[in-house]
Amino acid sequence: MISHLRKNEHLNKEMQVFDTIKELQAAISIQKGTSKKVGFVPTMGALHKGHLSLVELALKENEVVVVSIFVNPTQFNNPDDLKNYPRTLESDLELLKDLSPDFVFAPAVDEIYPAKGIVKPAVNLGLLEKTMEGKHRPCHFNGVVQVVARLFEIVQPDKAYFGSKDFQQLAVIKEMTRQLKLPIEIASGETIRDADGLAMSSRNVLLSAEQRSEASGISKALFYIRDNWKVKSAAELCSEAIRRIEKNGLMKVEYLELADSNTLETIHSFDQSPVPRIFTAVQVGKVRLIDNIGIIKGDD
Ligand code: PAF
Image 1 (tube, rainbow, N blue to C red):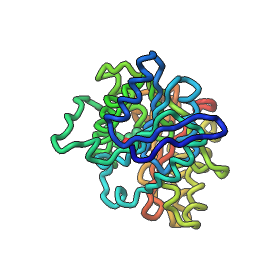
Image 2: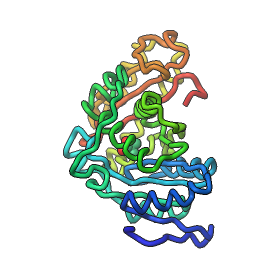
Image 3: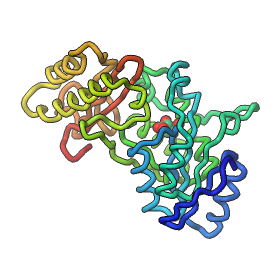
Image 4: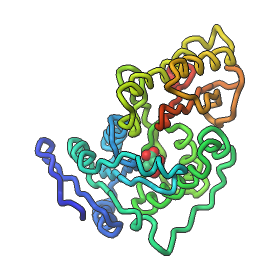
């Protein structure tokens, strides 16, 4: 155990923090023995309100809640991104203590990937790994599948929670769970935004003040598309959105694409899908941010 119990005096509840699989599984199995429903929120730490909203949801829907904090090296295709990814375990634990999930699992890399290696799950992601994030971050989803399958195997939850900001990741995890026939329900939480619309992301803390203020232009451009989809063509709206994001020269759009929410197939007009969704990845200096919104109001 890397740290002893963290007690939330207000809730009179204790949160146990583990860094070994053995201790975590022993603690979970005591609870499982009483057939309690286990909810799981996997994270890479640097927690923000988006993560906390998933933990809150998990606490409402399950009797036992596990949160993992693990910066997974295999899903980073850029070594600098991995090196610079914020690691804030102590403040993460403080934030979690306020909600008091039962267990926090914060393992080291060799606990998740022991020397003997871990068999990668055999899943065929098809289009999901060829489009958008899959195309621009080669091998990223391989790493996500690898770590999420490993964490699922360790925690064996009944239900696991992922944010919709990473909409393509959510689709990948649903597909992986389906192909591996895992008895785990995958739930999603809505994208949580700052007051100016910027989607909350662990990477936002890496932005300078100027970049942070500029970055609100990303969601504004997506909302501009949603507000005008009935009166202008998709092509016109997408090129105007890119122009708006890039207008001050501080941000560069990597992709901005319209796709079907269910299949993630690219579409070129709004009537090609009952659930069109706009996806973007934007480079803000050295920081890469992603966002997406459903075009039909209510399909956030
Ligand atoms: O979304 C994340 O934070 C990560 O990709 C996840 C799902 C925890 C896997 O490392």
